[in-house]
Image (cartoon, rainbow, N blue to C red; front, side, top):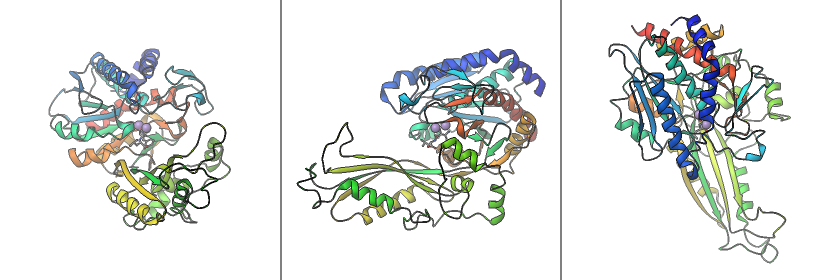
Length: 464
Ligand code: BES
Ligand code: MN
Ligand code: MN
């Protein structure tokens, strides 16, 4: 399909494209909270209906052990290549609600400094409903113009934000039906609206929960304080000891398998424009911090991390209660890079945590979900098609970058389906994903819808 024709169709349907996305953003499809189960099912049905309306041959809400996967396809010719699009319809919880300037499930468009054309404010607007829905509208656009150049399959899942625990089994059971040539995913970011980029790596994840138990019950902190280990004090010390003065992680063996990049590869990575002042200003921090010897881009792209996500125990209510608590808890995640393994790192963490615990406490370590890191080749036909498409729609060649986030299912797609993924994201890191006031640029939404059909065109042409 010609670029001008694509732009004309978008122009003619702009308001409807926005309205339809707003409809989906009003459904609070929060996978982490059981009370939203009916919304999850409503969301799955709503997406299925959109696929039918857009012209899919088949559209189905497929049961899994958890929330359903929406599957749809349009097969035009078995001899043509097949693109498999992945996205997720679930969103993160909107909490803390009081920090939102407008209700999270009542989308509104407001202008911002970075989005002068306006941005849609709602939970899931960028991650990932807005980005997922670009694919649906791009599909509609190609169908209505009789210019879908290849076959396409869609799998839109409902459990990405809670670790995709049931998707793996569904993928394995549906290997035949998921046969494709490449996977296309819009669930990552670009550097800036005038600086397109394509993620060529994602970090993996090992997510742990720890419980530290001191005395058998909460104690009077005066009667016993000073003579009995306080599990919160101990937990804080243990956590603090897991980074050294250079912000290296101290778990023995943690870095053993970390892929070291050549000086040239690192220089390339650091060519990507990055403005430290804007970064600090956006986050209102006086100074960045991280592992010694690495730039900010490297710290988020090619280096592993260990972060406390939450910590609790004792008395946290109003006023003051004097108590020496019996237990302390923390949720600790580690972002992993090639070639670390989520299982190995979880084991190393558990062993280390047990080893450093003083005799005065008992510890329990459990592993939550994990995922493996991924790398994407820049020399494939699919990468080239993606880069060509972006170059045409943005008027600039995209820069290959490493994304700091995780999409654990991408490694599984490679393992189970043998397929590479193209991380064709259009959001911005500053769009407040997972945070209050998440938003997605109107420019970004339409740029995605404009660029996706170009990918179809160039990819199909490169395979024939
Ligand atoms: N879309 C994000 C991942 C992402 C965002 C990658 C921006 C690169 C740039 C995804 O929805 C996400 O949030 N993933 C989780 C992992 C999951 C196991 C909860 C994450 O990265 O924390
Ligand atoms: Mn996402
Ligand atoms: Mn997310």
